[in-house]
Length: 568
Image (cartoon, rainbow, N blue to C red; front, side, top):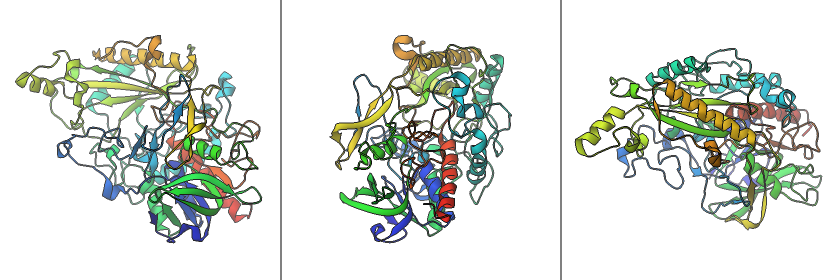
């Protein structure tokens, strides 16, 4: 699918070719078209429009599967994101001993159609962690340099929250947060008793009208795709307006194969496969922006070999594909007797938590570095496939007939859970490379992953488990599962499961140890930029999307300025 410009993208030379239409690609397309650039976006997935394609307000009983997951909707058949950890014809491999799963979205807007919209800024400490604890590397930029772009993103897209003035949880330009639900009030009471900071969430869901978009009406189905665009997706908040400028060509089902170069060694276009016909195509551009997701970008760079770049494009440092990370994670849920037999009341709200717990032990002496935040879940969502997680987990253990029905009613909404999302420190044993023997259905070599958690991550997740169990106990509840031991890594999620992969083309001031500079521009190829998670030097105890957006805007304004000056 190509829309809405020239019928043949090969017939012209664009100012900018962007690979990927998610957070980084969508933001670049939005900013660059508004700066007057002639832009083409290559998207490997299918078309999508929340206004037409969303399953919002569809009842589970309208499907024979009652919302159960499908092959291309692993989070449930009504979930807006098309893709998954396994995609037919698009394999990847794992080195011996590696546990890693790679999520790929295959639709316009990419992962922004799936994410929880937890929109946290990285803080001042997060850009300079090595200076604080001696581990990993500092970013070549500071929070102060990124802050103006966070502000612009807040005003453009919208995020609710509260100004708390915490040292490493920066305030933003916030819309009013929604009030806590009943179970969240119990969580807040327990957190206060344990001296755990608990504040309103920061989610990119509108609670007031903004830039022509309506506020959330609290149907709680953000993961299905919002037909009123009250929540953020790149699809309708960035790509849609970029198309409306008349300066964007969007090509879907376009699987990028390699970045091509001109005789001077500058990036001059992208070779791709038209997935609908299997034919090889090529688009030319003065500037190439990679925003295919961190690991897909690393794959594209490693596959873009030439006499000038025999080890892959912009890989003179040998660090493409290196220093990749994912968020650490684990979960604990429990039965809260206080929530049984509750008076029926309105539990509606946004499609996500109204409260969360930022890292509260920054200056404490612990047996692991860095930290994590806590996400809260529970309440009375619309029952669908898997509702309740199994009645056998509750005190009565289930039953038959009237007793079973009564138990479901009594226990409805009596589950509360916590998810930890923490910082992994990059290590030399975690990286991706091109598999020498395996290709995808289009003959493009695939990635092979090497993954290793360190003691830092295992000890951090142990702390998560202990904290979550203490919170449930403080609520007067019963934990559903026993504490996992060291033989199970204390319940740590496998690499890739949290879907926060970063790194692979990290930024730095030294071309010998990094791929991109402080502007996310390749050291060795000045017409090549990266605006997804690949340039990240490190994780943080925050979800990365808001920082991907801010850095993409920062890079896009730099590109526009350099093009205006004739430097690109």
